[in-house]
Image (cartoon, rainbow, N blue to C red; front, side, top):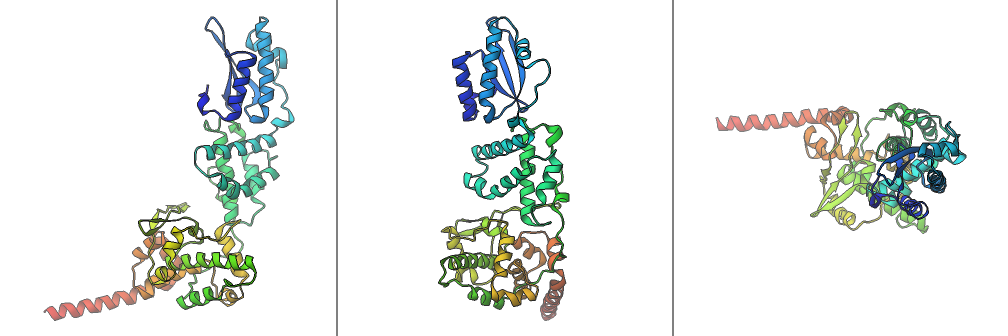
Length: 406
C-alpha cells in the first residue's frame, strides 16, 4: 500500500473515513488503475481483492460504499471474494457512466497535472496557461478509441507542422505514458493507451516549402524597431509594441530563436539561454549568450532581463505569435515581400558573425546553439564565399609575414 504521507488529499480522506466506519483492518490503494482492497484478519492472515472501480477521486464515495458492504458480509462469515461476488455477481460489472473511457481520460489528465505540480515539475500557472489549450482539446476528443486515435483526432485542430500542434501532441503523449506507468498508478490500461514511440507522423508537414534563411540587415532591424507603435494612444497596442520590441531586440542582439526569449536567465551579470531544443539528431545545450556589437549595452538588455521586464504574451507558440504580430505591422510588409520572417532577426546574427566579424562556422554555430552541420545547411549558401575570402586574406597576411622573416 502507498504510504499515507505521500497520498493525495482525497485518498487520505477516504482512508480516514474507512477507519471510522469499518476499522483499520480494511485498507485500500491503487492496483493498475483500479481499487485494491486489503483485509487483515485477527489471525494475521490477509485477503486482497481488486475491485472493478477506477482509482479516481470521483469514485471515492463508491469505493467507500463498496468496502463497507464487503465488510458487513465478511463480518457475517463470508470471505472477501464471496462478499464481492454477492454484491456484484461473479461476472465483471458493466462500468458506470462516470467510469467511461471519456471520463477516465479527462480524470487522468487532471491527475497528471496534479502530479507534475506536486513534484515541482511545473508551476500551477504553467499548467493553467501552457497546458490549458491541450486540456481543452482533450475534452473535445476524449471519446477516442485508443492512443493513436486520440492523437490523430487531437492533431486536426491545428495546422500541420505548426508548433502548437507539436506541443499539444507531446503533452498528450506524456500524459498517456504517465497514465500507464507506476507513477500514474496504472490509471490507464496499457493495451489501449500506450502512445506511439515516434510522434513525427502526427505532426504533419507544412504546406509551404521551407523558406530560405533570409537575414535582416542591421539597418533594417534598427529601422523596423523604430517603427513599432511604442507611443500609441491605444494602451493595448502600446503595451504589445513595447513587449515585442524587447523580444525582437533580444533575438537580434543574441541570435535567438523566437521561443528562446522565454528561457533566459542572468547569472553573475551574464545572460544565459536555458532552452533545450530536441530533434532527431540530438539536443542542444544550455549556452551563454554573447552580443557581437553594441546593441546589448545600448539597449540595456541584460539588466532588463534580470529585472523581469515584460515579454510578449503568447497564447500559441512564440514563433507563431511573432509571425502574427509582424503581419499586422505595415512597416514589415516590404520586409516580408523580401522573404524576411520572424527568424530573420536570428539569421541577421549569423550574417553579422561572418561578414562583419569574420567568425568561423564552428564559433558562430556555438554562439547560436546548433551544430556546424545545421549552420552550414541553413547559412551555407551565403557564408561559404565569405569564408573563402576571409581565408584568402589570412593566407595572404601569413605569406607576407613569413616572407618578411626570411
